[in-house]
Amino acid sequence: MGDRHTWTAAPAAAERARSVLAAAWSCAVTAEGGREEFVGAHSVAADGRILLHVPDDSALLTAAICAPRGEPSAVLEFADVAPVPVRNRIRARLWLAGWFAPEDGHLAFRATRAVLRQPSGTVVVDLDELARADPDPLATGEAALLTHLADAHPDAIDRLTRLVEPDSLHGAVRVQPLAVDRHGLTLRVERARGNGDVRLPFHKPADTVAQLTERMHVLLNQAASASCPRALQRHRTDSDG
Image 1 (spheres, rainbow, N blue to C red):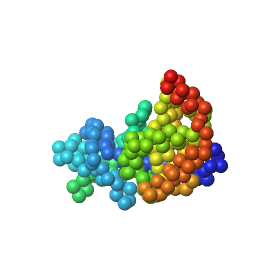
Image 2: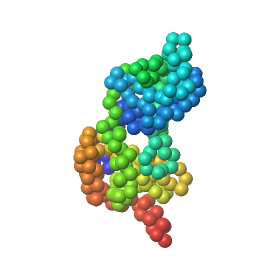
Image 3: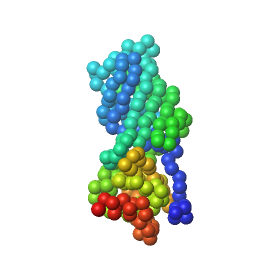
Image 4: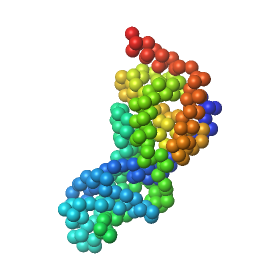
């Protein structure tokens, strides 16, 4: 399978973190006033600062106004949740430590430390790289793309499993699309005990939905010439019986 793909890159940590920020709908903030959850309240400025619009009665706003220097320290937490129902839906968590300052009717957060945790491990993200990074171009549309793939094209997911090594499908009870970015598609392989993820890289990056459609067609064409994995064949036979 190794010669079917020439593009094997995955998102760098800073790009992945910016994608989490772009797609996350909620933000949990732990500060001097306690812990609060804000929904649809954050945005990212061009210089990398996070702008948070909070209610007037927010304890965080009170802490920001009453802090001795007007700069209360805080930790922001963002969760990246898989849009398709799968086991262990949290794909990544991003923590930002830093401080808030009131600014033009909102709170501006400047990070002093960023930590990204993914199944592959936990990394400290360079703040300069984070400020310069752009989110994945598919990040804000990923949820709609993946749910459409799962709901309307289960046959396509079935065919794509032909590109997965048989050992990775051993004991599989369900395969679902877990994530997609400009570099590739990730499938979640659920087994009776545990689960695993398999990445199918695109032959070159996809920066638009039109390019993504073409990349998916390439994968499906490759899958059409691949034999059905024995492990999945056995599972289907058992299920049908």
